[in-house]
Length: 465
Image 1 (cartoon, helix red, strand yellow):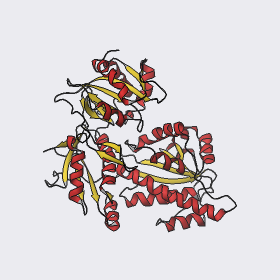
Image 2: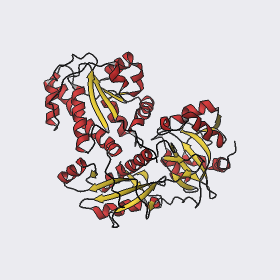
Image 3: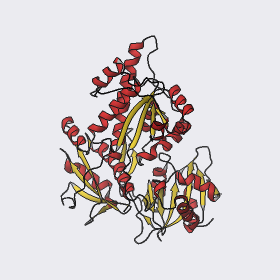
């Protein structure tokens, strides 16, 4: 079994003086994460200033914003940014676009990990990011470059300084809450009892590519939540399996009950749809962390033939893997739509998790089990990886996909970006190269619609080049 690194996800908020935006963001992010049971051992939030005076006090408006939104303004002293702080950070949240650019100029290694808070809030609102926190920066950076996201909010003019500062404070508070809601399910860890979960309607165990994950439901609508969870996760349910990790989930209309549950590390929400949405990413990340270093885990959809041959369609999060899996899964066995786990012998460990589907009447994504979408099950017995394809949706193409063979080194450079915890794999790129060569190399497929890939499946499953 893999071991999770004890290193916390380290976030540094940066602005010019470390007395305004950065300290407000730091204190409010800490507050919301702490309220969700996430301590500094899992996510560490600090701040610094590009031109800060060490020991300076925060601005009064920053103090007002922090305290108005329930945070603590006590014990603060500004810090000037150092190279050591940059080297020790995984993600940078910067006050403005100009400050982000200055940070990158002084410390080029921070460039691909630096986002304004406005950018970060918009990027997270645009993508369901199911990946360990340490992998978020490159995924978000790729998305930022593709989308051209605005780097600040619309604020009152500088002539109205007080109004502008308060508007910025409100937006910081709103963004901090939203980001904490996304990070907490990926970081909070509940204690795992040695005993199996109680055999009642509120508890079950799901298999996530060989990792038994105990799910415990609570709250005023516990039975409704458990029933909805069992429907969505029906193909992953297992009996008599000793769990290796667990997720505690609650739905309750009482805000005080939810706050108390979150402080204990539970995923607690006011309705079932939100609970199931965050449950999916929590289960996936907990399972990934249990198999660090022992499996190749790709951001990929997987489809299987009746004989157990599997094609992996590799692509970044939020680029159409779920649509691809749903479309092809009507004709081939649905293996997964997000994490394709492969052992050293090319055996694929299935993970037929729920799929996120945009509701017809709302903009909220719902979690649908593969049974509800009439996706074909995988065959019994061993599943074998036959082909790996890097896929890219291109609306400008015709209905015939473009397929090209990739040289090994070129292909590995792209594939490596889609591997969870690559640095923890034995022999790292050698392991990836061996896997790629064992399935006849990598192909890149550009396509317009997922249905256009159906004619390619027989050749891909046969491993033909």
